[in-house]
Image 1 (cartoon, rainbow, N blue to C red):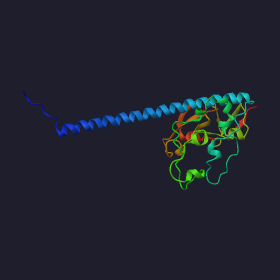
Image 2: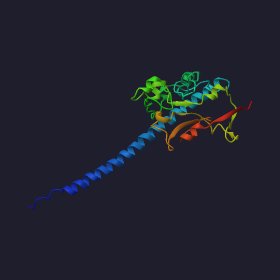
Image 3: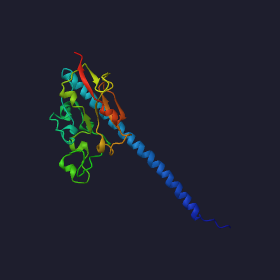
Length: 220
C-alpha cells in the first residue's frame, strides 16, 4: 500500500493565512453588525423619549420641557457657567416607563484627562476611565435647553441664525446622543449621532447636523 503524503509546511502556512483572512472578515462583519444593533437601540430609545416629550407638551399647555441635560449642568466648557435648570430626566420621569430609555449603548464614558478644553468634574481629571454618561448622570442624551429656557410653546417656528430663513420642526434637532469621547471616541468628520427632531422622527445624522441653531418665533 502507498503511504499517504503528509502536509507540507507551505500548505500549512497557506491554510493558516486563509483562516486568518476569513477570521478578519468575519470579525469585521460582526463588529459592524454589533454597532448597527446598538444604533438601533439608540434610535428606539430616542423615539420613546420623543413620545414622552409629546405627551408632556400636551399636558403643559404646549410648552416644551423647561430642562437641561448633564452636559450643560455638569461638564461645561472653560469660561461657561452651569445651566441651573432641572434635568430633563427628572422632568420627564413620570412620562418615561423605564430609565434604560435614556441609555445609548455606544455611550463609552469620558476618558479622564489632566487638562484640556473641557472642565469636567474632578473625578474626570485623575487618569483612567470614568463611568459612562448614563451611569454617571442618568442619560446619554443631550437636550437643547433653550427650548425650555425661552418658554417656547407650540405652535412655533424657528429662524436660522445664519440664513434668516424659516426652519421647520421637522428640520430642527431637539435632542441627540452625546458626542465626543462619550460616544465612541474623539470627534471626526465621519462621526454620527442619533437625533430626535421637533416633529418626533429620529434618525442617524452627521455630528455637524446636531449643532443646528435657530431663533424662535411663536405663531400665536
